[in-house]
Length: 458
Image (cartoon, rainbow, N blue to C red):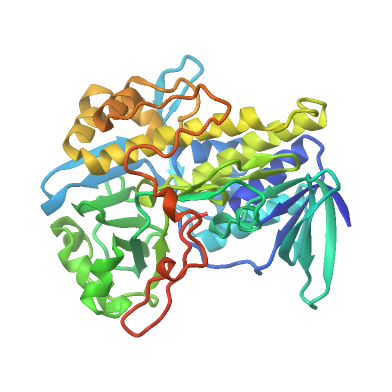
C-alpha cells in the first residue's frame, strides 16, 4: 500500500492535517486503531482553535451539533473570593481585538465529525494499529507497518509519516526521535466525570456567559475545571499531586464528590448536586518534551512530541494548529524545498517549539508567581495575554507579556545554536529521568490497586 502521507491517529490533529493536505492536493491515509465515536478528554477550545474550524469550513457543523459557545475563561482564586476573566477575542484585518466565540465540545461527537469530514475530503481511513516505522537504506523514515484487525501485518509506504498518536508518542517510543524529557508537572493526576443541575451565570455578556470555562484554584498544582457540554451536562475534573490522591485512599467517585464540595467555595456553590452522571475516570498527567521531533520522512504533531499542563485547555488547539502548519511545510517539501537538508523541517520545528515555549513560560509563571501573573493578565499586558489565551503564540513573540514572565521566572531563552531547544531550563526538566516510559515509577495506582493510564489530552 502506498500514499503520499500516512497519518498515525484519527483524532483532531490527524484529521486536521488530512483536510489541509487534501486542500493542497496531497493524498493521505489515516491509521486509527479505535472505532469512533470514542471517549476522550480535552473538551474546551481556544479562540484560535475556533478559527481553524472556521477556516476548514466546519462552523455550520458546529452550530448544527449545538456545541456550547464559549466566550472566555473565568479563574477563581482560593476561597472563591477573587476572580479574573480572559475573553475570547480575535484580531481583525487592522489587528484590532474584537469579540469572538469558540466552542466547548463532547469529544466523542466532535472527533467523529472531524474524521468523517476528513474522509469526505479525500483521506483514506484504515482501521489498524501502527506497529513500527519503515526505514529505507539511507536511514530515513519511509512509512509504517500496521497490524490489521485480522492480525495480518501490512506495510504502508509513504513519503511522509505524521505522528498524531498523542501521548502514545509512537515515533519517540520507536526510537526515531531524540530523547523524551520529563517536565515539572509530571506527578499529577486528573480525576473527572460529569454532573448536572449546576448553577451557571446565564448572562448574555461575555464575562458571565453560561457556557464559559471556569477554573477553580485551591493551591499550587491543586485545581478544578467546570466545562459545559450542553444545556444540562457539565464536565468537572480535579487535578492534584498524585501523592495527595493516594493519601486520601478514596475511590475515584468519592474523591471527585468530596473535592467538588471542598476544593473551592465557588465550585461547591455551582455544583450543589454532586451526583456523577458516569463513573469517574482518571489519568496520570505527565508533562514531557521530545527532542528532534522532525526529520527526514517524519513530523510529530501536538502531544506526540510535547505536553505541558492542561489547566488552560491548550492541548486541542496546539495539535490542530501544528497540523495546519505541518501541512504547509510538507507541501513546500513536496515542491522541492529543503530536499537535501539534514532535517528538511528544522524551520517548522523551531517555529512551533518557540510557540509552545510562550505557553510554558505563561503556565510556569501562573504556578510560581500567581499574584504577579494575575496583574500581568488583568492590567499590565492584558491585550497580549488575550492573544496568548486565544492561541496567538507564534507571530509577534516574545510579546511584552512573554518577556515579563521570563523575567519573573529568571529565565533567559536563547535560540542561537543548531539545537533550537532551550532545555533543560529552570526547574522544568529532569534529564536524568529521560526516557520515562516503561518504568515502575511511571504508574500510579488507586487504593484498590487499579493502574491508571499515562494519558491525558491529545
